[in-house]
Image 1 (spheres, one colour):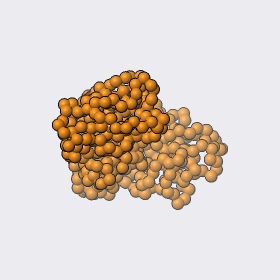
Image 2: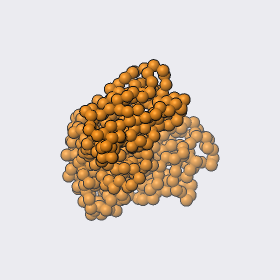
Image 3: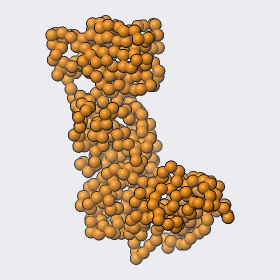
Image 4: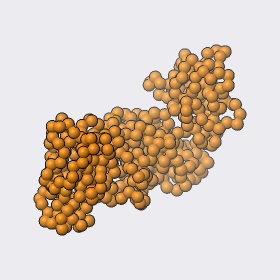
Length: 516
């Protein structure tokens, strides 16, 4: 849920009533859960109501905290759709009344009091909380106007303050939402997620978000300037995709970088040019961290990292375009990390380094990338074929694979030696390499085809350098990197630069040679 174009933001609905046929809802403009207390602005200690929907069948709608009669001390602390309450903060706390509209009129034993019938067959239940912070003051009061007849899976409303522009955006969403829903469901293998989805089109440019869990079907989408229905629909698609992720339960996480990246790319697939890219944020971040072999657990939430999201959207498009995999294949190969997904699809358990190499060669660090979308693919470079081996602890010699990471990660196994050569030979072009072994033992340059390092001595390589030689050497460039104990991947370096870290084992390497 990010405050990013088709990302999400955290927001809290405060107060609800019905006036002249309009659903009137007060929204806190800066609501978020922060530091274990309710954050927000309030000029005076007044109560506030926070309404949220619940599915009676899921059993998760019970009040999250109760106050002992005559005391200001809580006897429990739990979360209410992202709102956290503090325990034991005594009479200095402000009361926060949380209203809960049930799908049944049957009251729960934990309810403080029934409030009123809502005229729709439900019951409004109010639960009392105490918080260190004062309750939210509504920053915006939104009167939602129905956008038109509901479809099979969607109800669309818009902020009445948007006027004709809001109606136009609602009409645009209604015109394509069922087509989009069918496509997303097909990508996810035809699974069912229930319904209906309720879409609320709000003033602003925050993007889109859905409240509560990843499976929640209430979606808020920004109207932007209320002239581009495709942009609004793209936000809706991203949130619908995240609901499907939750029901699929295959590893995509709407609050994490893998799920956030997927939702953006799927929205872009249906609405090209209407999702602001994050790829440039990762490219321009300097170190370009690896969010393929690991997942950022909070990038899909308010305040999450656009760096990790940028890595995710670029890598998923890499699978889609560079390898020709359709989105249905990618979606159904979900995993806890994008590397897990890639292993199922392309058989490479270390896919980040070849991906990063192509982007490093295309967008060298140190200069703004200028990438305006998240899809620079396909990218191709000529590559001279290298042969050889890497020698790994407990594994032995492993033949070199072209432009692939050779070694291990996360297994604490040292690289003990390697050998490289051109295969086939290139007239006038050769290479040599040197290394530093465990204990700061330097090994001077050795020619191609000669093994450097040790076998059977349990000595790690801590660094190496590779350089081209021969009469044609100035017409080519060699690029390489290493994966180092505890620190991960080094940056790519070229043409004789040292790669490694003293007193740390190298666990793998990638080497690439191409014409200038």
